[in-house]
Length: 66
Image (tube, rainbow, N blue to C red):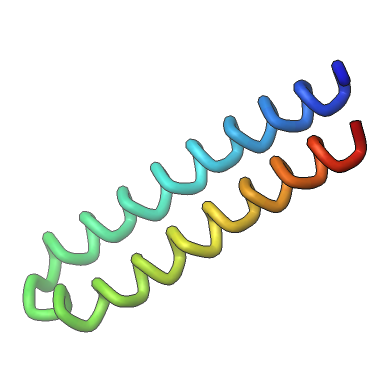
């Protein structure tokens, strides 16, 4: 079980870094060109969904491989 907890912790750390990086770059792009906000918003939601999906896959695998 300790390896599952370690994997979950590493996945949570990776998700936090990836979402921070994605939102940071989104804010930089929108501050440079505000007219792109409507075009970039669906892309950021898709990116966050994929990032969260990797976390939930890791959560499922850590619980499954108990």
